[in-house]
Length: 246
Image (cartoon, rainbow, N blue to C red; front, side):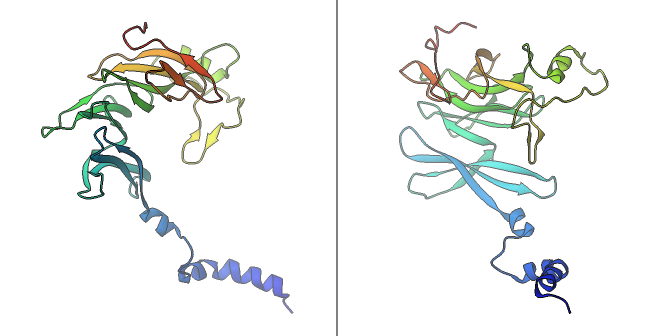
């Protein structure tokens, strides 16, 4: 005689997929692939419009995609602007900064004028993905964070070897020494052996300037108090834009 517990296990093994397919209260892979979401809503300075990002899963290329939408503050006239993510209004509401795939490759920062013409400028040509975009109060510059190779003393060996490897060289892969808890993430693989720099770039494009180095630094408030807030109550005093030196 088969015991009830064993019978239940056998049923779940051999009939599980069919049973789940028939259950309407279970989330399946097909449901996940059809999910769409919205995020990063930003109210315009005059309070009249909202920009936000709409994301979905590209089933063909197995990756997430995102577009930027705009609508009136009362929810009327939602419409697509362009492909991209992380939109943010300029202080006067005449432009938005956002991230999207650009030249030479990877994620870059773009600026779009919000007039009828809608001219777009690629403000950066970076080697790593930027994040945490913030406008300067006068609208002339954009601050952002970006990972850079960790080359200081005591850091993992692979980053030091990477810094010495000529471009295009095919060296034997170096051993990976794990020294941090968050060393690998789902959908990403091994996280970069890097730290975050704070950069400032002209809004109309140019060479970014590194202003601050800190692990996991995050751009917070760039305002009249003349400071940028980062985690764990650490505050870095920065001189106002125009007084900053590279």
